[in-house]
Amino acid sequence: MSVEVLKYVPATALRRYRTKLKPMRAEMRRELDRLLEGIGVMRGSREILPSRRANTTFELECNALRYSCSFSCFADGRLAELFLQNHKAGSQADANARDSAVAASLALQFGCPIETLRNGTASTPLGCALDLIATFKDKDHA
Image 1 (cartoon, helix red, strand yellow):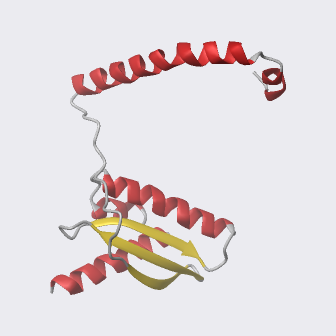
Image 2 (cartoon, rainbow, N blue to C red; image 1 turned 30 degrees about the vertical axis):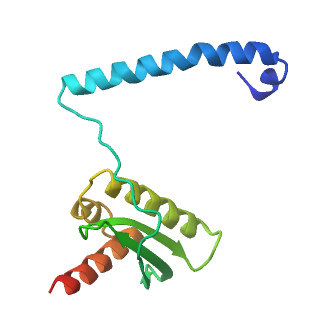
């Protein structure tokens, strides 16, 4: 259905459509959980970070581009989130860096080990940042 066609659909029809979809989505979610549980896959839960937390910021260079990275950790010392941005705000490199950092942060909060992310992103700005963070963390524990 195109956007132009939606302009002419009455609002009451859209409300009826939405109310029919809501129970269907909940039912589909329950069915998906049941199927995943049947094959031994459990949906993870996200570890929520405190509102206020310490962070560390550093600069790095990867593929001749400069980046700024900030990261914070859970109370037990595991990496919890990172923010990555390029020195050219609004560029495609900046958008890619920010998006990859958000995806990595969510993966970390759902329990993904940092080694898994490091192996999969070795030659990217995210990989460079994760390598430096691991180096910082190793120095802290030494």
